Length: 113
Image (cartoon, rainbow, N blue to C red; front, side):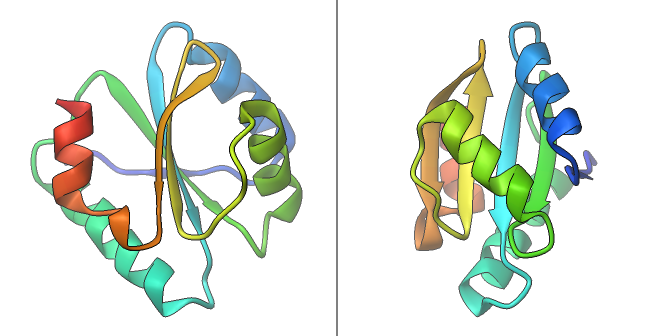
């Protein structure tokens, strides 16, 4: 089972973005106050508990608690902020993203296989 790691600083985000040239990363933007986001987190964790892509690093950003990080991700990737939102980052760019009810285990499996 893979686990996600929380991003809490813009410095951590800068490192992850730079490392995406060597290893792709999935970022889940999560609101701790939103029931739709709670459902997306359950889907994310269900994907990670099954057979996640081993060539991918998995992260979570709490958008309320870590607003500067969330804003910088949106700015750096040119992806309009939404929550919940999942972004696949490769070579310093967003190559796929989904939000709200599209953040599902099934959708992640299709994209990451």
